[in-house]
Image 1 (cartoon, one colour):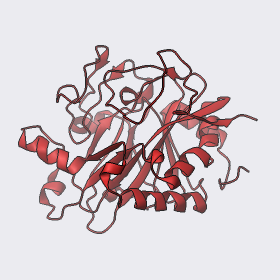
Image 2: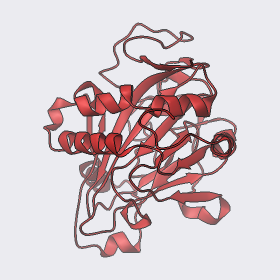
Image 3: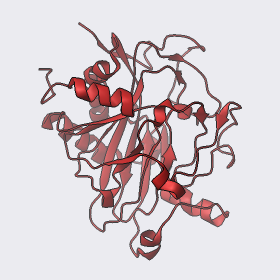
Length: 303
């Protein structure tokens, strides 16, 4: 048994990840690491936003877009909500907060990634830290992670972990199973809307990318699974898998989470114009280079 895990990853879970593009590893992470993550999330979201490489207040962004006539995702329940909370996102929290850094670099999550990939080594790429406060009305629009990264390869995943009990009402994650096998690359969007970043002037156009279909408007046409979670669960998805989540409809339950990104053997550097700037990414990699460096450290090797 690997220290920090309550059990091993099973062969069925490996198969589910590879075929469906997502697997919920129930209760696999020890309480020690869950608590460390929870403490880190509490610290970062109570720290001045100027401390972090990238900080988004998606609630403020949504209001600005609404005033500009951008169509936001909403529903009858959000329109009826009288309470308001914020949807906050930090990228690169591991460069600032020691607890997040320890979870990202020293926890057994890298071992889990290696098992799922079947790789001989695993690199840490970056983090995205998320908080949907009670009453946060913003959706996370369906999207894929691939166009937000400067990576190329099959062995790239996000590990979504929350120290909270996450239900459908508190914005549980939703995944379109098998969509990681769809052809083509999809344009990144602004999360609170289906509109692409490039159409809003927030990133450059990448010529070979396509727009996602309107999954929100045609949910019955797709194989969508909702993964509620409890502390200790680790939801792992392929970087090309389409995923998103709804608002936090509750009045008193926050939804804190970290999405930690790992890469395996076949991954190389690939600059994408569509990816928003990440000022903390300091390296000299060129397209096609193996990503092993201080910025994207190797955090696990097979014995």
